[in-house]
Length: 309
Image (cartoon, rainbow, N blue to C red; front, top):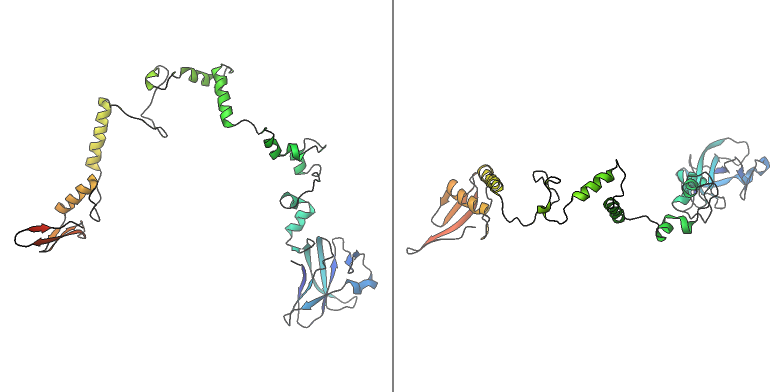
């Protein structure tokens, strides 16, 4: 996408732009030069109006190299006539940059994310130089010193499992320093039972506090509960049965209901309003809304009540 010189003014004018580089020199159509009034005509770049909109533009010269430039507008080709305004542009050699791009290019920061550095070493004292090189010798070698090269060379460091195993082995071997956590770890390891059976725990050294939270612990088969544990379980069941309320059903459960569903359906049928006509029986909730109906029939010999639905 090309870059443009742009200006707004009254319609019907002939407008020119004179381009200056960062040092204030003038573009003469092929290069920048120090101001020379005799070359004024070569400095003028004609802008074209879009219809009668008062919007004028011209393509920024593609032969100008990337950089920061300003340009001044004139409505006359005569040297000495007043200008009618100005603007500036950051040009990347192809299109207009939006300010920050030119700054990044000036300090080569664009090479951090986009452009290959082409093997050029980082400037001494720069951030990249400080993290890559230990001194001003700039001895960083991508093939051996980059993070990928270090990993490929097997120098990525020990894994967590390797470290854990080494700590365990050191504590078991007694290679600990007095006053450190290694001493405590060694004592804990030494006090652990030989097998995994809870019956091998020494109550003078270890305790199992089942009263504390056992998050993450899976309890296997329980052969039997002691009398105290059994009494506590029964107490919890009685408490739940006597204090936990059951929500009314909103429809008839299927042929294999839960205990709660079966009890609640019977309770609602006995407690709530219950109506029947010559051909239909209804069960309602506390608010009087029908939740189930059954067909009724009597042929003089057999009375039939249909399935609740």
